Length: 198
Image (cartoon, rainbow, N blue to C red; front, side, top):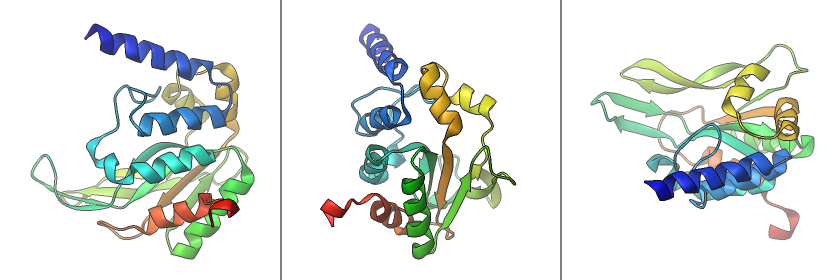
C-alpha cells in the first residue's frame, strides 16, 4: 500500500514537471504502456478494455496527440447485465496544426467521424453518442471542453502545460458504426505514420 502511494507521488511529480503538450503526451504514452500508475485526470492504471487499443494509443501520444478518453468498439453484455454497444472512439488534445490536419484527413478518408473544437472556433463541438447502454445513450465523445473543465481534468500540471492544453485543438475520432471495428485505429495509425516508416 505504501509503495503504491510512493509510486503515485513520484508519477505525479513527473506530470508536474512537464511544460509542454508534447511532454504530457510522452508521459501519457508511458501510462498507456503501464510504466506510470496514473495521469492527472485518472488516478489508476488503464482499464482492461484499453489493452487491445494500447499500441495505437501509445503511438498517438508519441506523435503529439495527447489522448484523454478512448474506448474500443463493443456490442455485448455489460457488467450490469444490460446490452452495451460502443463505437470505437478516442479524444484528446493536439497542439500541432499539421498533425491535427493529418488526423482529420485520414479520418475522413476512412469514413469515420472527426470532431474538432478550438476556443477560437464557433460553434463549439456538441459531442456524439459513443455508448448505448440498454438501448439508451450513455456516454458521448467530442463535446467542447471549456477551460474550467480542462483545469479540473489536468489539475496539478504546470502553468506552462496548462496554457498549452487550453490553446490546443480538441480532436475526437469516432466510428459511425456500433460494435467492434478497426477503422478508427487504422486511420489514426495512418495519420501518425512518418515518411520514414512508410
